[in-house]
Length: 559
Image 1 (cartoon, rainbow, N blue to C red):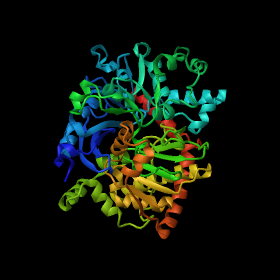
Image 2 (tube, helix red, strand yellow):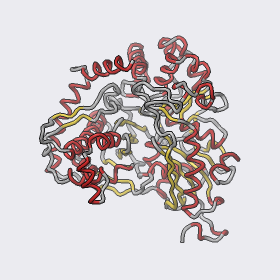
Image 3 (tube, one colour):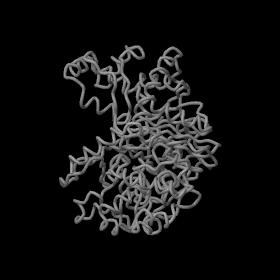
Image 4 (cartoon, rainbow, N blue to C red):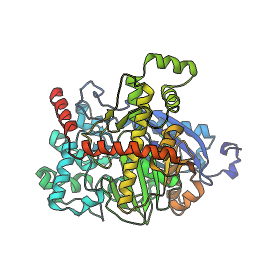
């Protein structure tokens, strides 16, 4: 019997989780008693990612990635009612709604939350739009932020592994100031999309502790000082007090009640609990049962985010941040990541999948990824003679440099598409091993890797990760890990559970050690990984600056 078949006097409470990804938003209706996912729906963003031009045709420079905020509201209008209908759940059963977002996805708005890009006079101004997490055009600003913090010995820099990313709030805001100062002056709030959507749902603007700590450099209750910001640019001195600072809500807190407007969009009851915002990766950890130290969760999709809680604080080189309570209360939450994973595999299929292979795949009823995976599965480790660097979208961890680019070494006239595809799969696994080793050598042990996200459906990729990392690899037992995590936090905000650990005990689901490393393959991968690390350090640590020189040449040619 599903929830919709129950009598009115015996309706089980449910919550809704909404996961905002790079290309779409997904809603899931979850029963709070046991975490059963009763119905899901997905809505693709109408404008997708703007990386070539704005909707009016205004061209964009290289390394830009923008979005249109109305696409996020459309997810509430479409996906939530569809998920509710699919679940057979009555609206009055829903006691709360939680959301998660890609981070750091930020936008400039007026004091009432109106995005600048929605004002007709700014439709052709790139800086008026949402800057998606993979907007990497602020690398120069990020480098200056890091260099000045090093020179001034700013203590907060250690909490971010010694480098600030071009993806984060301050770098993107400084780019806005320096490239479009008029728009910067009109910006009254510089806001994470994770908080903006909660504002639209609840009528309350509250900064969530996760993005504030990891992406906004909020540590021990303070942001970087006005003196420091003025040294970056005198006009930047008042950024925190004038555009960023706002009360911070803890994860699982109630931000407010669902407004009448949002109730009309979603079909949910007015006044139900709206949870404080969260980040797609971090919200997934408790959904994957990772509520104890040493269990690293890799959320693998277009990119990969690695999150883990620990009872130990350490400075991990190249980490994206360590925040007290950033994932779970009472523990240090660590974040690292890879800027390109599924994006890399998608790029290869789009640009290098021959027509003959497409015909074979169609005849066998496979999509391109399934076909290349099947062919690559037949190979022995090292049989393709290749090694690659997974930097087609730059390097997030441990080098924190988005001006780096991909490498493929070992090509011959006998190299086949499946050879390159497998080498790219392996490169991303090597990137994850590099991150794990950075944690281990810094005194933060990683005992198990748990995978969530769409890529966990590829068994070859999962086995490669187990073999390369030499760790047991678990998988979340949900196709909607972030949305499930958001729903679990909504259950806490609604008062059904006292905290997220209690919610995880009742609602989380994962299959531990679904893949185990094979000693023979692991030994072979050790040899390939040694070659990867030689290339990694040679191109990534300053021995050869060819990637940066090529980037500058491209920029000159595009000017």
